[in-house]
Image 1: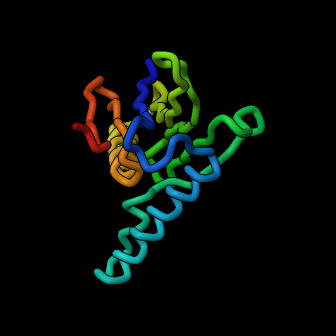
Image 2 (image 1 turned 135 degrees about the horizontal axis):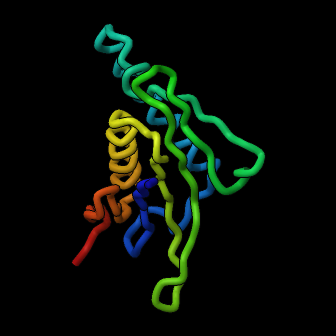
Length: 139
């Protein structure tokens, strides 16, 4: 059975919603940061840190895209955006899905990407295991 993690934009988040293009830009920025770290360390860490290519399919246009693994340890992760009605107001989220045949490496990288994006956007993260991490300012 597929597992999902959600990055929910709540009160105190940097943005109220995110488009797929903005999400892709954030992931590409993450990959660029890894490559700069790799240059400083003198080690090609960017391949190990982001072992995926960003792929799209016509049926997912505007709704989701997927990260396709570039080595046998990683298969793919599906990432999409959506919204739900929550207590009289609309709440936007990013959904990260691990398909049935995803590897342990995919789950680790999925958690890593979710935590990075949640910290960056000060969002509420609902992990694959059901636990919640709060990166938004709370009182």
